Image: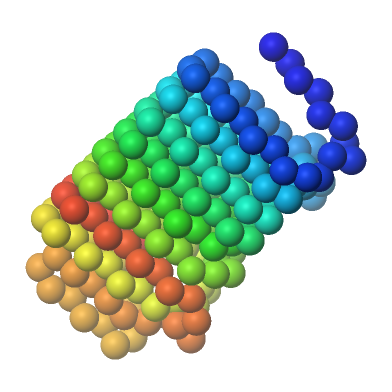
Length: 183
């Protein structure tokens, strides 16, 4: 099924998908589809988003896959029970949580805080080389690592903390078990 949305629509949109596939894309990176709020609720299947700009973004999924590219938001929230989440070229505040599976986030530009929590599985957070952040990483069991050279660095068996650049934005990564990588 194809649904056409008027180009001048810019209010809130709520999408509920049980299973199957959803593709939602703006014209291009330079001409994204702009919304006040985008809310995606999925049970399973696959969601692909690209070239979207929303003041608020919320994604909740129980399983399946979510891929996003060029997503710009003032405030974003991703909550996935299991499965895989891959976000590329993200800008804005982000709160992401995955119970199990894989969470892969690449920030195009760091403009606000990032909070990532995983019960188990694998988390990769890819930050710009010139990002200004204060990192607090904690792994109850498993492993957490960072390829950034950090000022005031503190590493022990399962935790890592420190500052990169001015330390302006907070980066909090928490993993109960599994592996987290900040690069």
